[in-house]
Image (cartoon, rainbow, N blue to C red; front, side, top):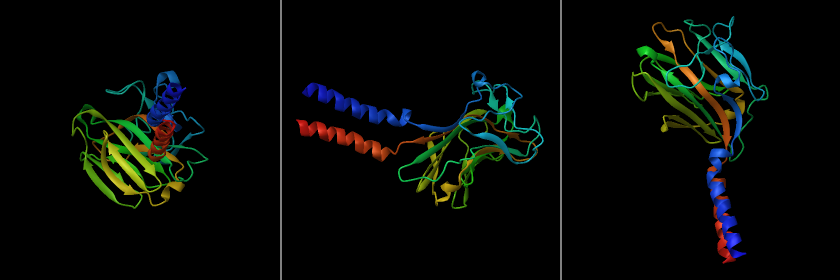
Amino acid sequence: MQRFLTASVLGLVFAVLAAPASAQSVYFEEDFEVGNGHIAGNDAIGTNGWVQGFQSGNISVNHLVAASASGLTGQVGDGNAVDGQQGSFTRMQNPAGLGGLTSGQEITFSWQMLVNSGGTPTQGGLGFLGARAAMDVRPNGNINVADMPDTDNQYPLPGGASEHVVDFEIIVNESTTTFMADGNVLQVSASTGAFSNISGIHWGCGNDPGVECGIVDNIRVAETPEPASLSLLALGGLAMLRRRR
């Protein structure tokens, strides 16, 4: 019996420690894969009640799915309303919204972007709708971070001017918003309570000449368990085992 209890508790602890990677509530996920119905030249596809719309720019045509791009898998999002036409942002919006964060909740918004394709400077980025939390790549080779307290800061783009794929993340909880690129923290800002206004995400680029929109892929908005709560659960299991002994 003792061995069974020990094995059970340790199994619980290991399961809890592994939970952040698997126990996620996914609000929206867009990988543009052919197997999920994406065809080059067609619209992006909404999932989980999310629908495509427009925030600004050319609204006569939708943002289209593009063919595969270097360093990315399957189809990708081209960031433009039409090939060669810039100055448009698309959005994926859930009419029900994401709601306001409660204690312990955390939302991760992640995506990949191919930058400097063919050596041409990149612009464009992604952000939340309804709250000022976004990252965009500027033609000067910097990442601009726009946070909820209404400040803008720029950081060097990892990899510089070479053609490469960058992994971006915006992690929001009730007190802080963390901006990351290639696994490195660029900035941590106050959330300022504005999360309650978030209703979706948007991506696209401006209309500066001589630049290209960043090509985006693997967009994901997911809720992750609070690390502190998971740790307490694991510690509780170990304490129970010790009392039994």
